[in-house]
Image (cartoon, rainbow over all chains, first blue to last red; front, side, top):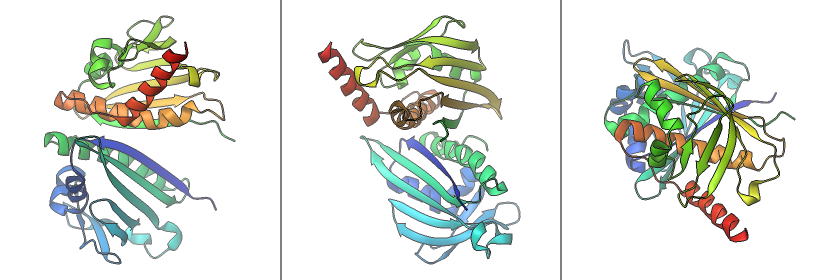
Length: 145
Length: 161
């Protein structure tokens, strides 16, 4: 079966290190994403996307590839279906310095089940989350999700 | 084969009125659209025009729909020499208030299946719309290598004329 994918590019006036930290530091993700992203971010380690309200995980996965502050690849699944390989998708973050003072961030979410709730959810979710991330890094204030 | 279609959504901490002005007034587009002056503040049937930073005309396209500050649709046929020969495509801007911000959806479609322009706009819109968001939220647009690439096409076109 053909898998679906979603790609979003945004340019942020910031540094690669700050963008990396904003994706991997739970104390920063909580301020614009409403969740803590938690892991030691070593290749092979587990990661979790935890709600602020009760600490439960909404998304879980593994760190597949890591090259701070340029590239992070993780698997991505609903905890209830994380053991079903066809329900596990893949997210790549590529962070490149851009011009004098900016960063090009490319998020590629692939291996999604076409027409699934996850595909619909992330296609709406990434533009909102990445808009909030950009505002947070440029102005200190995240746009609301 | 399905026809190419580009969709990009961004959320901007601003009002639909300010986002509308930023999309349609040349004095504002110049501040974030990498020096381009884009005028699209007319009614349906009027023209959308765009001029490069050097004053070359880059667009002279029809405004198809205009419902400020909610919906704007215009044709898109670059006048740069190496991009001619494709039929006009179509750009739709939809602006919705959302939690004290504006949700802006840009849909660019109606391309030929083998369009070369599609590849350029797929790189161009994220740069333009990122810069628009920065400009409205911080007062400063971004720089772009994409704009320099287009400027080189533009220079080539004017050399060839």
